[in-house]
Length: 77
Image (cartoon, rainbow, N blue to C red):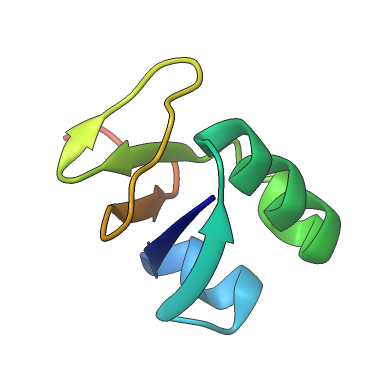
């Protein structure tokens, strides 16, 4: 298990009521599952996850000190 810092942006922060939160997790899939259970409105956003400033696809194992960003959908322009 890794101790990580979650950072919520824009609509994700509104859905959770948090800007930052400490969490202990193994991987990004477990974070997504827990957040969707804890905050059903967040699960409706189709959000992306970035780890240490890199957008990820799929699951990623986490290590102590990682920063996990919860990013709402982007609109173009």
